[in-house]
Image (cartoon, rainbow, N blue to C red; front, top):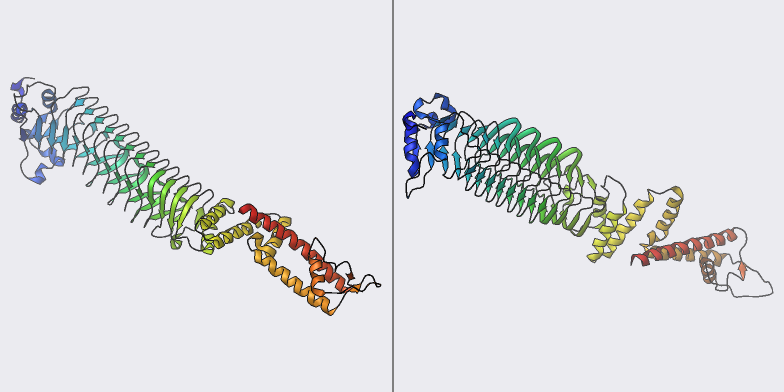
Length: 539
């Protein structure tokens, strides 16, 4: 490039480059210096993109002992800044600049890049390698920011960045690799889809106070995202459209504290098969209009839904199916509007609150070691019976085992008795009759003293009746001693003999009374045996 062809502003930049000095073309008037007003700037603030390209690819040698750099503020960049496949060894720092065309850094190898407070009609940096930081703080980018396949060895700072590409990709960062932190906070906003599938972040990923808008699709698509430290989507984070973290891995904790997610009639948060090395916080004002799913997720620490608001009336509002977590804190701010699915989840400690139990639950296959609070069997049975799938044996057995492990054997027996009664409702009429008799007589083996009560009652009844109306002697030549108590007991016992029943025989209506006592004794004996067998097998 011929230096004689440069404008005064371009010449200033050209001469400042070897020593890395800054060139500021702004006026000092904030309103006039806004890059959104660049169309009104004069020629004295215009710099051709080809001049920047020439400096960046080595048209001017650095000054010995100084770090050469392109540092420019308040300029309107005309033409196309095309550095595709270029190798740039000097920093690029543009502040408050406006671009007429989207810069192309496609597969370039760059030193640190700072585009702060700039206005761009797009930025293409697919496959770009940045040996240092990529700093876009406060910039406004329309038409899409492409960072797919890019590799950044330092920080990616998008604090306060405004991205706009309605109906398309506001941020395309598939397979992006950043070795330090990624900042999308301090007013970061995106109108269009933010894509981070397969991205790798070596530090923290921060979306604190970010606002994402893509109601017809995914607001944040980050399946298979891998973050070495923490992920913050809190502090006023708002997403209109699905937040997808399916198969993602978080090396620290994941925070949605106070976040607002909205995807009515769809999935607001899809975190299926998520892996988090510490805790997940969807708490303290977390609000989701649409389904929240952690199906198959693995959380090493606590999964907290304390103080959350979940709403998806027409389907599953919260899916924790097959979740594995050390602790589940299921104490939302109010009742979850929709089904809560806990089927086949494995929780060490389950903390909930009766006042906010969902009206509809799915509990089959749920495994837990401890409940907080344990509550009484009557209260916990009301919890089990909210299962929309109806009777299933496993939830009763799991609850009874938990009570027994806490030393609350009476509550455990009450749960198993309720299990037998609820199962009876699903059976045919013959089994219902047999079950009803077992229930009335011995409480399915879980109420052993009930059998003794029946036995004492029948024994007392027979003793009174046969004391008043003594049976006839079968052998008139023999005069045996009659005892109404032992005679009734002999009738009741289905096996063995006390020598009374073989000597005496009632007649008339008393024969029917005797037969009734014999039949009752037989049924009672069989029922007691069945109950005892069940009790022994349980032990």
